[in-house]
Amino acid sequence: MLRIATPDDLDAIAVLHAEARAGYYRGHIPDEDFDSPAEHARTRARWADAIERGVVLCAVRDGVVAGIAASREVDGVMTLAQFHVDPGRWRSGVGTALHAACVEGWQRAGVGEVRLEVFEHNTRAQAFYARHGWLPDPDEPRSGNHLVLRLEVPSVAG
Image 1 (spheres, rainbow, N blue to C red):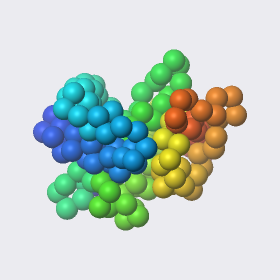
Image 2 (cartoon, rainbow, N blue to C red; image 1 turned 90 degrees about the vertical axis):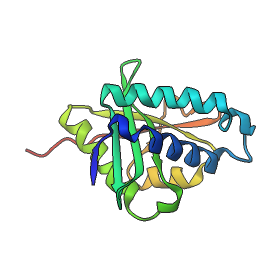
Image 3 (cartoon, rainbow, N blue to C red; image 1 turned 180 degrees about the vertical axis):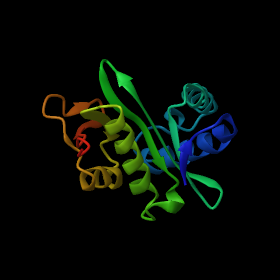
């Protein structure tokens, strides 16, 4: 099931976010940059704000939040700001279903292009995005230690 997150989902979203980030950052950047009480509090507050604005999409499996996505405009460009799947559910279809729902939402909103940043060492996510049509941004291929990708959102046939 896919649905908009509610405040009741905040704890599960915060845990999923922390676990996913640990999976790709650990060993590449200092743990305190992603796994400290201060960082957890900061990201929890950002998720609470996004949930309040109604921009967090949840994939729920077996009654548990298994994936989350949040997009927003940044400098006039729609940006997939967060996209995480519970590591225990990788390669189970959760990410693909969540991504398809994001694309459908962008189509309904008339969005033509979306941007994201993916950690340079997160090759699993890079392969996922490539399978779903994301390409390196020709104008800005990097942002610090992240690769910048773009997706041309297909128009709805009508």
